[in-house]
Length: 212
Image (tube, rainbow, N blue to C red; front, side, top):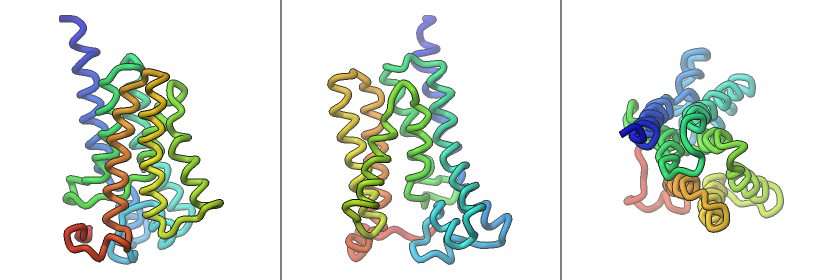
């Protein structure tokens, strides 16, 4: 009866909200609106992401795109964390929704970005309950500065994998299974989106992704 609202309705609501908000590609729209630059058409990888916004439109506009791409992951999770028990399994779809929304970008259609910025925003929304954001940030730093992986997509694939693996292993001690399940889904989406853009795999026709 009364428990259906927090147990079902709230996470479904925030999951839908996160998916739809995640599907808005700010890094595509802002450069086009403010500078008349189509970053998808002009960038080598045709990715509607923050890095291309910085390269083609400069740091200030790129940082604005970064902030909005992170915010669309942060906001639904942050709001949900104030309504849901932090250890509920219903947290998993709330975490996954904005990342999947960005990756699929159903409004464009189905040709979204690599989901790095939105993932960081999503994980920041878990603070201070979970510090899973460091399970993604530290591998990125390590493989960017100490053991440098090229291209960037390969670095992302490895970092997303380590995010999922760490959170699953950590859940055996913390019992944060909703976080583990959600971050595992995020890891799979991030690995998929970056794998198909990695030149190592792009030679395979079955992994080729069409332009946005």
